Length: 268
Image (cartoon, rainbow, N blue to C red; front, side):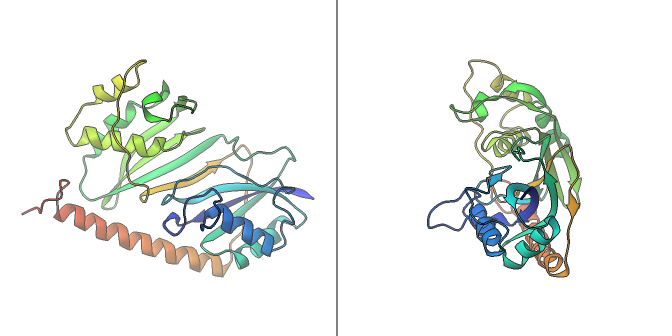
């Protein structure tokens, strides 16, 4: 029996979030079903199944991670999983120590895609306010740990879109989407970077809203050990089809945003 860490991706638009919920199609539910169908795990409880990052409904991933105990050889596990999985695909695996918990990652990497015309410099200036260790009480739920360290938060242009990139050892629930909403608030001229800085000060109350989940992608979860990539033609074809659909959607919404301004009125 070995403990395996498996990297996998999914299009979040087709699921009700990651966590298993009775009567709903979820990412964990599909992963568990595929692992069981592939005989990679016999019992989900005794296999000590764990997920690295709990993504919200609508959020996609390229490199989320689950860990579980399995009697199958690592590469055989991935191939058997991909034959059974629907809407998710595994592409890398590592054999890890028995005590490994995927939540204890070195870094999580998220990207948020903004199609259309945006002020890259203004967005980058706003995001810099979040870099470093801060008390993000205004951006988290009350019962969560709010003092967190953000390694990087930046903006870059990619084709006709702006990509907002975030890296940190961990993120609180909805934190990235709240960062994006705050950056868009500053970009729109409704507020300033100083408003964001004040929101990080003790005893203040601020709410900049919550950005849509669909443009958010968990790009990778990183650890201090390598994974072995495992690709097969069927999985590659499936991933390419999803990427093509996403690029087409991004192009469409980019043109829509440019045609109709940010306030929804037609640009003439």
